[in-house]
Amino acid sequence: MTEQAHITLKVNNEPVEVSFAPYKTLLEVLREDLNLCGTKHGCELGECGACAVLLDDLPVLSCLVLAVECDGRRVTTIEGLVTDGRLHPLQEAFADLGAAQCGYCTPGFLITAKALLDEHSHPTRDQIREALAGNLCRCTGYQQIFEAVEAAIQSGAAGVEVERGPRSAGQEEA
Ligand code: FES
Ligand code: FES
Picture 1 (tube, helix red, strand yellow):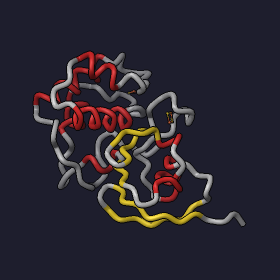
Picture 2 (tube, protein in one colour):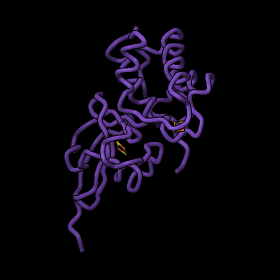
Picture 3 (spheres, helix red, strand yellow):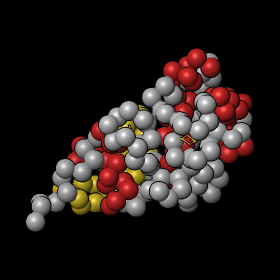
Picture 4 (cartoon, rainbow, N blue to C red):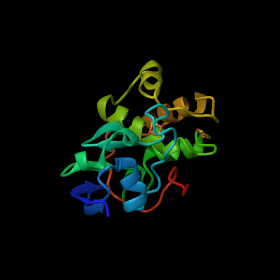
């Protein structure tokens, strides 16, 4: 039997202990061991952005991070963007403006956009485009996504603190 790795970490502000096969990525542990299926697996090669999460508040591609490297760290997934049952303004804007169609890429876009707004409260269209350049979408043509990020900024998305919460937009089961 494969020896198990065991780590403690904070996921969406909740302390979590988890055991898993030591070769697993953070993406695999989130989905398979913590049942947080909002984070999507796409290419698993670091090329599509579907698996983006925040690690100590910085965006990472969870398919490229070994879970054993996350001991003692903070992880924010799409499930953590809801506060007190309310969608994050980015989620509202994506829903309102048709920026989520099939929705598979949406959690990655939302997490990456959240990281951008944590850094820049009023990014330009070019800065938004650059920040989201590593996230691929097959459905929207990107225009609605850029417009949704801008609409969220207008509605005060920058600076919204995130906590844990129930299932929300952009985290459908896969
Ligand atoms: S699944 Fe991680 S970048 Fe594609
Ligand atoms: S909404 Fe379908 S891949 Fe982006």
